[in-house]
Length: 102
Image 1 (cartoon, rainbow, N blue to C red):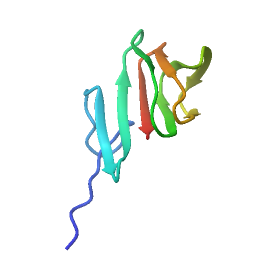
Image 2: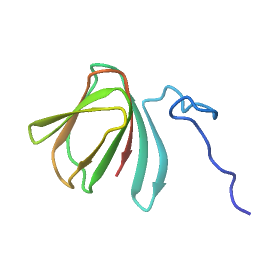
Image 3: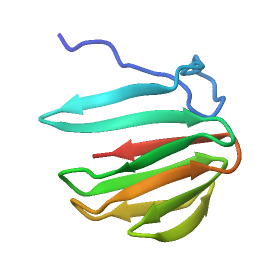
Image 4: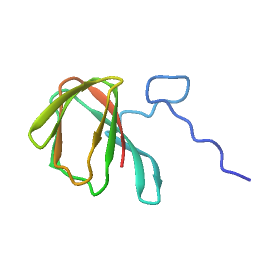
């Protein structure tokens, strides 16, 4: 017998909303994670790096993602691939919701 399906809504769909938490790990398997994060306008994530390539998908809002001093503005529907080890930061311009795969 398999475990029940896990369901939830990240975009106000028909399932229970993910809620107001700042970060929710949706999947953690073999060292790879899919993380749902929320940010309020003005919040920042200081410069950091990851040991593997990172995919950021913007579900809602507007952010500046900076890699090595080069900022890129992203909005809902956009995605960004950040190279393994590249220093990067995030500045939230509007309330935002993102998915991170790392």
